[in-house]
Length: 249
Ligand code: NDP
Image (tube, rainbow, N blue to C red; front, side):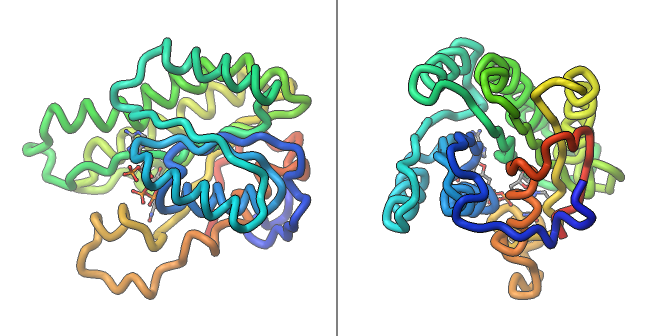
């Protein structure tokens, strides 16, 4: 493991010839990760539920001279096993393999006291943040196994390591994410698939402003400032690094 992934230095060829799928690639941290991976030479697959946002990221990557991305419009709330299997078949057909998977998309829901947690909202958050990530990752295994070395990165949160009042289903979902990553990392240890977790920490995005509407966003790190850690875990420099849960700031 790099002694400090936050200080990892990367450039235009760090991710050359890699194909990397980013969920929630249309906004926030996922958008920045997709653009950065492309700037490092990767072909990115932009998955998300708002096609306009994905198209805007696609345009930015192409305008910057990056490899032409692919777009997968998909709402992880409703997607089924067959959607993920069809996507995997297309990835194998078009790219032959998948070198990286960034499970980044998540729902925050509404922060509320325990007794007011809405059951439908609980189910939606568990579906998008946990079950869909499990289903998608499971379906993608054949594509990940075709890469010489593949990196799966899940996205956690401070409240996925220590519960906090009012963070209800979101916090529980992030504990589950840490658990899923640990189970996978242990199971695939010694294979070509490594599994790690990044906690971005407080970052200037729409999700953060929903959780903390009164705070001064200018004091927060931008998604761009987190990118050394994200690129490190997708790069060959992290081959052999498995079952780590790190902070990007
Ligand atoms: P944003 O809300 O800014 O972006 C989330 C992205 O996920 C959006 O592109 C969104 O799509 C997409 N998404 C949400 N629901 C679905 C769905 N059902 N199907 C497909 N895509 C979906 O969040 P951040 O960038 O802030 O967060 C990224 C990750 O980092 C999350 O896992 C979050 O939990 C984690 N995190 C963030 C922190 C922060 O301070 N920002 C702190 C700790 C963790 P759309 O644009 O259409 O809404």
